Image 1 (tube, rainbow, N blue to C red):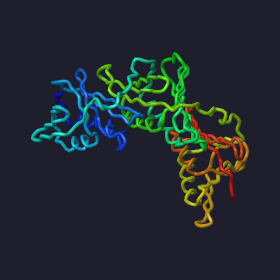
Image 2 (image 1 turned 90 degrees about the vertical axis):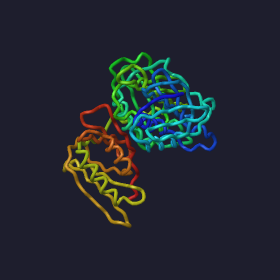
Image 3 (image 1 turned 60 degrees about the horizontal axis):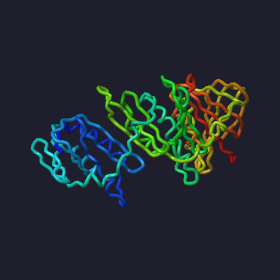
Image 4 (image 1 turned 30 degrees about the horizontal axis):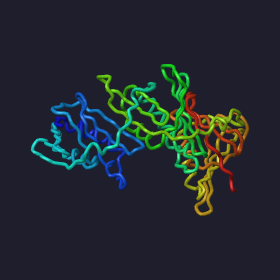
Length: 375
């Protein structure tokens, strides 16, 4: 193999594929990146066996070939090079790099040792705008938490039906659901559970990139593919295994009747909860009292070791007065995911599930369970 490529293009590509690479003592080949050539492209491939990233960079191919080299070392070395054209050449299993007045040889490995990356691009697929996908993931991705006993809630649940994608996450204490409307109808209803780590990588890698993302399915794997702007050729493919199991019927816990509805300015409510949290003690308890008579919300917290804090906010209330206690972290997380300046806070009962929604946007909801007050 022999190619010529701009330093910046190689560095940007390596920054993406090295994201999933960590020190692997049992399978050291996974610490490496596979560098390949295809038509007029340099191809960079990495995997941790759960997730694989494949990235194409337009470049000048003098001679085709491939090599496997340490990913993070190559990335660090490339970053140190001047912003010039780089020549990469493979001799045997070694990679030779020339840039301006610098000549380097990096010991590589046989490409035959590198894991085979599954090809999914011929299967069933649908398209979604990259920015809509990233925003949807950003609103649910932090809700999940690892669970050995219930691995299905460790991931992000995707449901495809008609012209809508539902993206859902829960840790059994709170739940977030985001609905994304598609321009085209989905031919076949489909569901899968994507592990949190690759979901986060998909969001971070595609953030800021324009275009349509194709999603390809099999029974146990999924691939997200972003095309190039100037051609139909793929730019990035992120493939992940799926979590086996059936996602809980989460819609059963979303209440459809409410004792009280409150419309409140998000930033004011968020700041008051954050302030009260300083006094919340070891169990993170913050009380929210909906005062229908005064059309205000009182936020308070009390700690025997620190002191107490109470504040009020003028709001619009539809329903009865009620006091509910929350883990402030769950309440803050929910409000921070809401994009609108006002939010709707809906309480079903004193110890029943409550809902936060953005005002004027029915595509997102956040369900949070109250805690039993000890005071």
